[in-house]
Amino acid sequence: MNKKSKMIILIVVILVVVAVATHLFLTPSTIETEGSKNVTDMIGRSLEIPASVDNIVATSPPMTTVLYMIAPEKLKAVNFQWTDDELKYVPGQYANYPVVGGWYGTQDGSYEEFIAAEPDLIIESIDEGGDGDLSTVKERQEKFGSIPVLAVNDTTDVEKVGESITFMGEVVGAQEKASQLNDFNNKYLDMVHERSSKLADGDKKTVYYAEGDDGLQTNPSHSAHGQLIDLVGGKNVADSANQGNTTSGIQVSIEQVISWNPDIIITNDKEFYSKVYSDNNWAQLDAVKNKEVYLSPQSPFKWFDRPVGANMIIGVPWTAKVIYPDDYKDIDMISATKEFYSNFYHFDLSDDQAKQLLLDSGLKESNL
Image 1 (cartoon, rainbow, N blue to C red):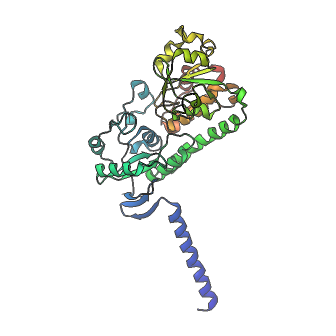
Image 2 (image 1 turned 60 degrees about the vertical axis):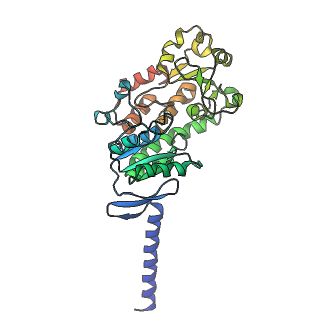
């Protein structure tokens, strides 16, 4: 073999090695054997999971929501019971998941019930950079025994959820669905980022987020629960600077809300919404006088909050239309709603159903 032939063979070998190394570096499953594969989770732990993950349970609603969106046939239990109204928008084959609780606001998870669901994999939500995450995950792993516990970054921030959606899609083999969800989210995030950045402070509409059946609980700016107000450029009247920089929920009085006199009120509470226009106290507010009170669509997950997470992706264009309808005339909310429900809730809405969801939320027909 001459020198030139040896050189060509050497180059080919180098190219093959580089290609294999590149593939291994870019794929989350770095080592795969028959029936299992090793993955590195989002807290840096290496663990072995089934090569084909078919049964999954998450320990908190935001992760459960993502799993329902991208691979509902692989989800084996949920953290809370759907209401009858919510079930109207859930296909029959997904309507009877067992309820196993979880470790989030209610802290009512049952290890026994999780294990009884016979999952191949358990997804644990972590706060990116949180000091207690590793110890929490280790505790879960100890309690769940041989069932692998995969740590995935918190999905409660609608602007950061994409990385976790992509990671979950790779783990469960639903990359295309995950990419579809991120494309939808990025489309509207790009739109509101571009337009909200041009709003002068004096042109921003003031917004009050009314929680509870009396409307007198709220969340200030920079809270995850009211993040969509900040995102689209609304001015949250319960600004954290006026509340001791707290980002947790706060109790207020009707007198305080009257003094704020917001342009717009957004709520998740059906009872509050049903009586706000007939209540003499609330009647003093401009938002009530001008019919600018809006109820987040509820089913099968709320669009605006509770849980915070990927369910709020459809809430981005909705909140933009609520607060700045003139700036978002190019958004067709009926089409956007149908697309989202079909692709991510696995439920095909008619035009009339989508329109009714939006009208019931308080949007004017001219703004749909």
